[in-house]
Image 1 (tube, rainbow, N blue to C red):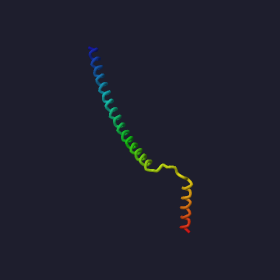
Image 2 (cartoon, one colour):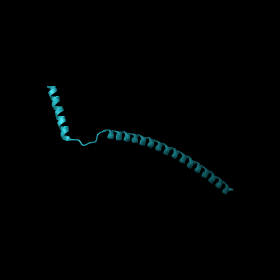
Image 3 (cartoon, rainbow, N blue to C red):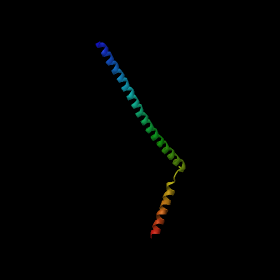
Image 4 (cartoon, rainbow, N blue to C red):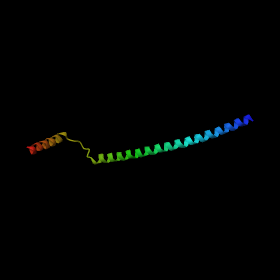
Length: 86
């Protein structure tokens, strides 16, 4: 009779263990799915920012800049400002 009680107790413990493991697995899967969803949203946001930056780059003329021409233009603007203040 003692063996029967031990076997039933062991069976009950096994059932409880299996139920606990299934519950843990379900909760872990839900948490992982939530993290994947959040990462997907972040990735989509970053992809949108990349597309916006690529659009800006293609819109800007990336030709070589002549530094002398820019320096002369800046000097002329500076001179004009000084004259208008006087």
